[in-house]
Amino acid sequence: MTERPLVSIIIPTYNRHSLLAELLECLVRQTFINFEVIIVNDGGRTVDEIVRLYHELNCTIIDFPINQDHVHARNTGVEIARGEYIMPIDDDDLIVPSHLARMLLNIQEADLVYSDVEIIDYEQLGGNRNVRSRQLFAYHHSYAHMRTFSTFVPSGCLYRRVIHEQIGLFDPEVKNYWDWDFYLRVAQTFRIKRVEVAGVLYNFSTTTNNASKDLSSMRMYLDRLSAKHGLGELPTKNFFLLLEEPEMKAREAKSEVIWDGIVHSSRLTQEPLEM
Image (cartoon, rainbow, N blue to C red; front, top):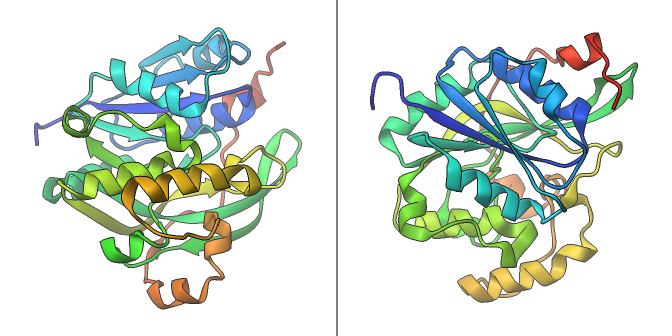
């Protein structure tokens, strides 16, 4: 690894300004600071003023004139990324301050690393998110098991940009399952490692529009994924529902939980904008 490799952090967003601001707040608190931020605004209201609140970040904004779906947004970010490594993060998820540094340390013996997460249910109080519940999502890594139930959470994962040169971009044809598809394609050729620390806070709240909550609309894309990789008949599950699966109980693993439970107020809360 070069002494200070550049990491490209790719954030697709659509009309979630307060959540995006909280994520940017997490990024300015990272202990490793050599990264660029690529924000792909997928046809939503402008995010320029929010980004200006975080002027110390090296941000590039791409504005789509109309909503083109999050997979296209991610691919656009990948295409302009300059970093040796890429880290995708959803605009409603958060990472702990040591996350980026820890992932870079672990990728020295892998090509893609992903961490354990905490699944968080928030409530909105006074412009801030407060934790209603938090649950650890940590499972032993096994390619065979990942063909039945994927426990790969893409938010906050880190991988070498050269991977795309060999396997191409994310597949928009599988939409909600772009991440599972990406994992399966990467695993055919590259080294994957699970980091046994819950460094990502995965938002699964009833107060936000999380695409993985709408199971009925996901069935068609799951069938496409299954046909593409020969996975057979698969149940439609999201990460939250996986927690209760009997098969998943056997795969549970120990993990270090390090988040202090505090969602730091963003500068948007401190300096409200007229949107």
